[in-house]
Each structure stands twice: as C-alpha cells, then as structure tokens.
Length: 552
Image 1 (cartoon, rainbow, N blue to C red):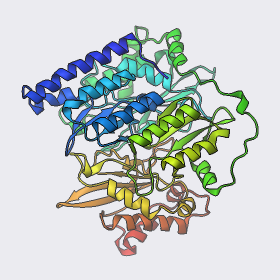
Image 2: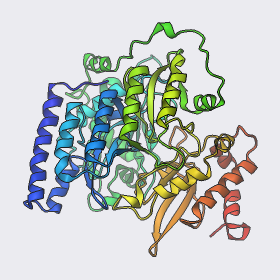
Image 3: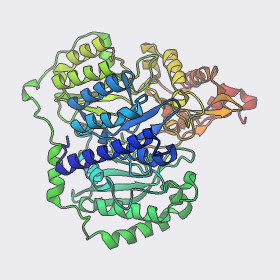
Image 4: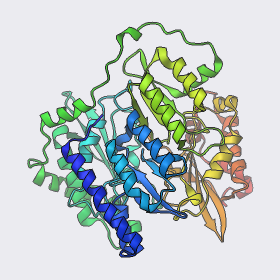
C-alpha cells in the first residue's frame, strides 16, 4: 500500500498545526461557529445533532493492521469505544470533543492518515473496488490510479472551492463493485484492441434529492492522459456549475441542463488545450506508484487440495463471505459489520483490534473498507479459512450474510445527523431481526436493502433493490419505499411504489415485498432484481396497497 513521502508527512503535520490554532481560537471565542465552519469542514469535522463528528479518510478503502489499531485506540481514548465505517470507505467518530480533535489528528499522522477532503466543496476521498489487487476478474488494480488522483486532487488550487462536493470512483473489473455510475466521475479500467490500458469515463452520476445515473462521456482515455482529462472535466464544471442554488450545483445537474453532447464538446476542447502539458502522466511515475501496490509474497506452499470442515456453519459463511482471488489458492474474506440486530457499519475498538490481529496473522496485514460498510481481508490462503472463521466466531464477527437481505446499508439518520428527518438505525435493526434466520436469508438469496434518513441519500437508498427513505410528515416519521435500484454495471434508480409507511408498519411492508417476490419468482435461482425487472412493480403495489389502491 502507499507510504507517505516527505511531502505527505510535512503537508499533514502542517495542516494539523494550522487546525490546532483554529480550534484554540474557536474555543476561546475569537472565532464564531459561522467563521469556524469552513475551517473545520476542510479538516473533516462536522457539527451533528449532539456533538462534533470527525470523518477520517481511508483512501480507496485500504488500511494496514497498524492503521486499524490506531483507529481502535482513537475510538477507545477519544470517542465512546467505537467507530462507524461509511459508504465512502471512510470511518467516522461520532462523539469526539472539539478540544481533542487536534490530538486525534496527530495520532492519525503517526500512521499516515488524515481527515483532509472528507468534507466541504472539494474532491472527496477517491473510492475503489474493495477487492482491488485481489479480484479474480480484475483487469488491473485500480488503487495506483486512485492514489494518483488523490495526489493530484489534494489541495488542488483550482478545485478547493468547487460549486459542490465532487466524488470519484475507480473500478478495475468489468463487474462494477465501486458504483462508478452514481459518482460525479466514474472510471472503468479497460484495454483497447491493442492491449493498451486506459479508462472508460462516466460523468454526472449521483444520488441525493435528484438521483441520476452517469452518462458515458468517453469510451477510452489513455493512461497517460488520465489527469489531463479529469482536469478538463473539473475545469468545465468549475466554470459552468451553478453556484446560485446548492441543490442544483452538482455536475449531474450541469449534465442534465446542458446536455451531455454540448458538455462533452466543452470538455474535449479543454482537454485538447492541456493534454500535452504538465499533466501528462510519465510512464515511470505510474510504475513507481504501482510498486507501492505490488502483491504480497504469496506462499507457494499453500497450493493443492484444501481439506475444509464439514461444519454447515462454516459452509454457509464460505458461500457468502469468501470470494474468488486471482491466485487460485487464496481467497478474499468479507467480515460482516452487520450482526443481526446490530448497527450497520459500527465496529468497537475491540473488534477493530481483532481484525488487525487476524489480518497480521493470515492476510499480510492488509484490510479493506467496502462501500457496503463491511471490512475485507483481501489475501487469505484457502487453507487458513477455517482458522480465520474460528477467530471471527470468537470475536462475534462471523455473520454469514454478505450480499444477503440483512447486509443492510444505513446512514446514521436522526440518531446523529442534523440533516436527517427520520431514524435509519432502528429500522435497519428491526429488519435485520425480522429476516435474521439463516435459512430464510439463504431462501431469499441476493437482495440489498439500503436506508437513508433524509433526501441526501447517504444510505444509498436510490440504488437498493429495496430502498427506504425516511421523511418528515407533519412531525411524524414516514418511510417511502423504492424498488429496482442497483449500483453496479446494471445501475438503476429505484422507483417509488406508492405512499409511505409509518415507522411501525415499514418492516411489515418490506416483508410483504419479499413474500411477493418469493411467490412470483420463476425459480429459486431467480434473484430479486431479475424478478422485479421481469414482473414490473404492479404485483408489489397490489400486495402493498390492494388492487384498487395501486395508484395511491
């Protein structure tokens, strides 16, 4: 993984000292909260309902065991003993004291981490496939390119104050596990007919109050032109993006209002002006970054037949949480942070330390954060899978539900967030408990539920197979259901099925949807999304509202 150079160390230390003085001035009253707000946002500090929140960057979701131990220490010493892993592959601390945040940033700097560009109208933390560098279907590891984008975008003088926040994701496989089509810019690594590596470029995706699927703007951008093309997109957006209305300031609105063809002409013209300048990527620089992400020294002695236990609990976990690796005798393991009845994405300090221990013993000390709010051990020898499973059981992290109905994504909602209209966490917990039976989850098969507590869609409800949006109706929490969303290469925005449900009734409504699917699927092998796309929404509306009220 990437290691800080001298510039990185000096840059992060200088920023921490600068923020320490800003915090001192806020606490002394020299700065008002309004004056302090843009300063804290540049350092990942939000003001939520009850306390400040610190969002720490985990670039492209890659962590070392040493870094995970530091995150655990911060949770124990400066928070309430836990952290919350997010859909941006970051981690949030919900209860730090403002006076302690500079000390937290000092500790993060010791392990080459920071909170810069995790908030504000800038280019945010670049995300990538959580199986990057390990996936059997990978064309190329996307992390070197995500790191190059990180270096290019960090405090870029032209893009520090964009019209709105800006998100980039990179996928290295044809199967899109990075949700590139719901990002401001999505990059799909591919090779042209000559075998040359480059990128398919998607622009204008996003969720929030106006969800949109990105438009493909270029079939192929050569590796050496990557930064110049991104710069051309950002310059065009910075010039024409709306600043009069923050709800219409994202690039997706610019794409919608301008039209993709006209916008492409502007971007291509900008690209032609700068493509042969300083932004052209030298091959030796790219290869130097790639060296940081060289695969670990896989043990050739693990090759051959692996005798696995006949235990059905292990078999169920292997089926859902173990994934194919590009090296045949290895696998990638998803560690679910979705225990039945638990809070999606939360991990205690003790759990983080256990994951760090397991990673060091069995996975070359490497950990990933997925945008599904789980953790991943990317490189585990297949012969070690039973030992890893046993260690996870001992820590209470053995839930075999990756990709199943209880692998729920949920934002913090009204329990924490000042923007939320409704609670997400209690609904996710009740849904998890309702569908908690292992047998029932396997009967249902792959199905994603995503929950947001407000229209900002931090829970990605728009791209859930079943999406749930909490809204406020005359002081009461109401939950709107969407069906048919998907974040991957078949990306789609879910469609509203009808009127919302109360907090009391929403879990029953989801169960009705699931039961309808089970009754109408053409075989046990037909997953929910395929069945929904075949059937349309009418049978689900009728099951929820009755034949006479489907238009409600």
